[in-house]
Length: 95
Image (cartoon, rainbow, N blue to C red; front, side, top):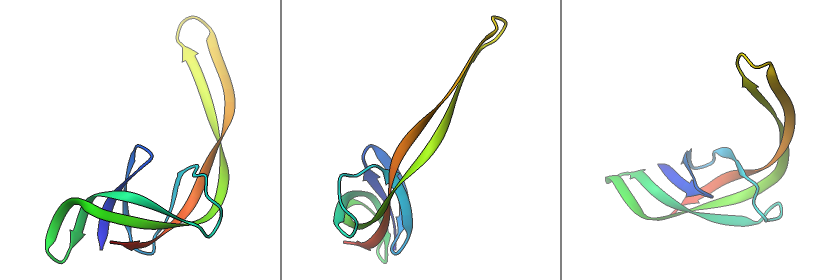
């Protein structure tokens, strides 16, 4: 079963058993989090809304991001990095 979930302002295509990375969630490892389903593809075809996805938190990770700003012809260049926090979750089931 495939679905598109809406989680923290992002729409993410998922399947059951899939591991995905989402923006930081305030939940401990092993806890479950629910997400709204925008589009659901099941046996009866496509359905809009009315379903929930249950996500299990696997762990928290941090990924560095490089930010580069530049304005041409003015010798303006700035580079800095930012560490963004993410949460890895597994899609347990789509109800």
